[in-house]
Amino acid sequence: MGGYAGLTSRGQLTIPKKVRDALSLKAGDTVAWTVMDGLLIGAPRPRFADLAGFLGNPPGGPATLEEIDAAVGDAVGRHVAGDRDGSGRA
Image 1 (cartoon, rainbow, N blue to C red):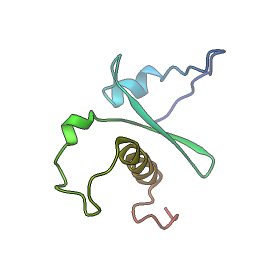
Image 2: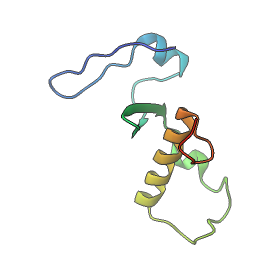
Image 3: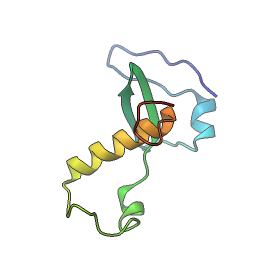
């Protein structure tokens, strides 16, 4: 599924209704965006509190929220692009 969205003069995009419905997005939800190989990839971002503790203690010790956000953004981009092992290949 896909669609088109125009960019406003304020830098805003409106996600098409079909896409919002398919992803169960509602007002106030957050979408994680990343750029990978020149493509803009967006995915609904779960609330961090919903994921806290899911994977246990991190192997490298505690991480900052900025480090966590960056790692999640990279993983989401790789997942959406089909690059599950980080090799750069789909």
